[in-house]
Image 1 (cartoon, protein in one colour):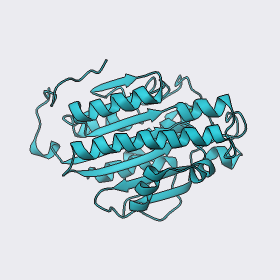
Image 2: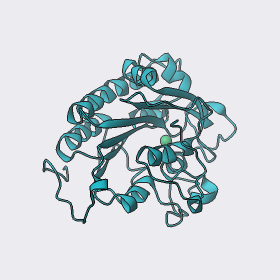
Image 3: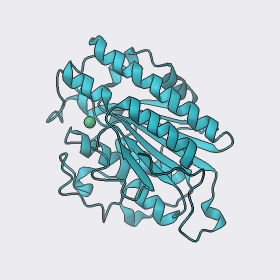
Length: 283
Ligand SMILES: [Zn+2]
């Protein structure tokens, strides 16, 4: 069930005018999508996003090649020696010292509406607790459908969507660009991203958008765990795009770079005491 049925949620906080910035951030995470498979697949939606922005093809996702450390690096802007997540349990996480993106933004912008929809609980069982609402669905089709409803009805300022079916397909068959079922699943995700983006653009026709497409790790054969030395697992792709033709740094990106990029987009001054490991990719 969706948690927001209103056109606009009542705001429980005292807000100043600066909190009503017309900027929107959409982050779509595809679990376990290999770069070479993505490049081989027919993905017109992601390709056009990349053409309008930037495609980073060799993004270091850091050590401990299971899902949670990758998503945590992405959403905290620091590596596992700081955030503490080295497996999928989150048992040693230090989100007090290194708050996730939603928590950090809520401190600065308590009135911004933040939502997530995940088709697997791997991200939200450890993070995104500051969200105004979150959904975990059973598959990507449901996640995409719920995400579209939340975009239209809840008008999020920041939204994170996790799609997991590519990961399922890779485990069931193989994480291999020659595996047609794996490629077909990536293409299916591209269609779903197209539907989500259409809803996003129609709902926010005049606002400034920042869109990211990410993945948490690649794969090799039937798996990906304990492969810290395998570039098909440790290096992933990232797309950054904006409807205003934002200039992107042509640099070697890392998973930890999304966090400071989003902060810069919202004009948040980064405090050195936060000890972030990433750098903004926006020029
Ligand atoms: Zn994963």
